[in-house]
Length: 359
Image (cartoon, rainbow, N blue to C red; front, side, top):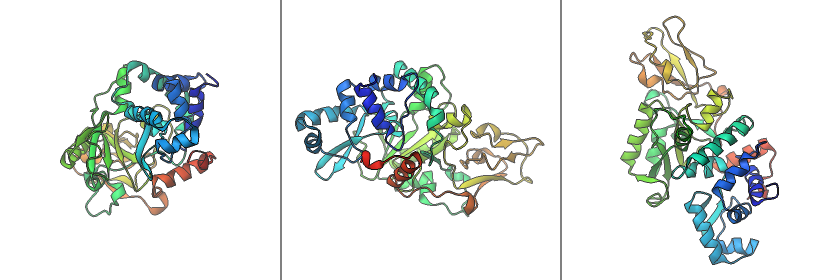
């Protein structure tokens, strides 16, 4: 497959800031071959991040625009590329593999795809997950932050939901994938959330169940009650999804729990503190921490501030209100890039990539 369309697409995907590193055992090519036909892979390998209409793509690559439109539409419906409004009409563009193509397979992943992804993950994610800046950022459970603490909109899961104009939910690809290979967990599956600034946009999106704002808030609360960690893309504006993650299945959090990669996900601007006078030593908070930041050597919880990601999952189960989140000192807080485009520029610079090659 060295000169195959799949190798060409793999190279193209690895030229994106998110990355798609080759696997020594070739599992990256087998993964793409499961998802794309050879012709689709060849076409996707020539798409750009910037959305182009079928007519523009046909002019650049050759071919018939109506035929291209049919192929591109089919690929969008299967979550292989993205589509959106462009200057000349509906445009199509390249999706990163993660976050992107892979997550869009939640509605039709099977055991073969699940195992192919696991093979690829084990081969490559030790080198890809530590890339900076991180792809994902933790945000706290809303009720874990006192009302006296200022919380910016991009730091609040509730505000992200409230500020959206359309809401949807899909199954968590990570928990579905792990279940299919025999590693299922007890956490809810239907809690991965998607948002849009345009009302009605998600009503007919493949694989997405549209929600009302109230239903979206209920889904968020259900995820918090289950002890899941809220995480979003590592930028401030244009947040279009919210993952509710666990170390059992999440590709990023497994990097921390299984592979020991400390900086796999950007921590929130908050950290947990304990009021020792209120702590009853019940230990109920310990199993809620996904980051091994809590211990209890002497009947009072101790917090490793370096490991604490500021998710607040432990705070909401403390019966004596001994735990709370406070804002980290400014020197310990990295402000996320303003937009996803700015994140791409920073990630491309860190990886030594030329972004103009894919835009």
